[in-house]
Length: 370
Image (cartoon, rainbow, N blue to C red; front, top):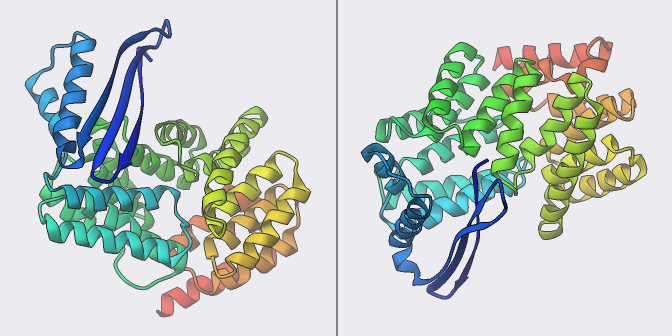
């Protein structure tokens, strides 16, 4: 890393204060620093001003296409932009297994696209929320592919749109097509959180754990509030037999989930990853305390129940208790989540168990009849 950009944003009323500093990655010295006080209505111009100041500080000469990429935001409407940012925040830190989180993202994104029909980013994020409703809650409805295609029709070079399409194709078992979309997205922006997260997910499902680690590590580094990639890295390192990697990933996942739960105590999905991290760190009693509390606060969260079952299998070897948690979930989950369970390394130890086999067969028979 040659340089690091740090800063903070503070909003008060209709004003915003942004501090930014550019640090030399090799020496730790400050290359450039500035503070900006502006009206919120000037936020887009301010973004351009900061970008130009960084380019000048680095003494770079941008190609025309590079300059265009920096200035491209997707919308010039501040309200649509703010709605998208709110939806994106919920998508990263929200309770993945809760209908409220996904429905909120969908409403925010739909409103953003009503305000600016040419704004592609909320369409891509809408696709992810629609997928989550199916995957984590067993909901009927759109699988996200149409929204992803809509985003691509508006901006064929939007990395998040390609990664959203890849996610939808992956969930539908169209792995080769999904991989092509991921490769396009990575070429367009290898530094995108959404792109690296989608790439990690594809490799995880395909049980290519070394590659999944590569992309999930990048995603977790790009988004400090992310707990999903951080949590799944614990499973990835376990699958590769890297004990030090497990410990390192578990510590990071625990720190992130604790911060989220402090602000949102009933975030069952975050608590489930905290439980997994605690168990991986050998804190089994504390893990069980968190699990009991989470089930009291968010008892219908299928994502929470599934993740708890994984922890019971991998770390605590309480197989019957894990199957008790999985059984009601398998009666509701759709084929996307069932297919995930069929390859998830966290369930390998019970894969030959008669109860688990019966659950899978019953779920597949139910979905075939539907």
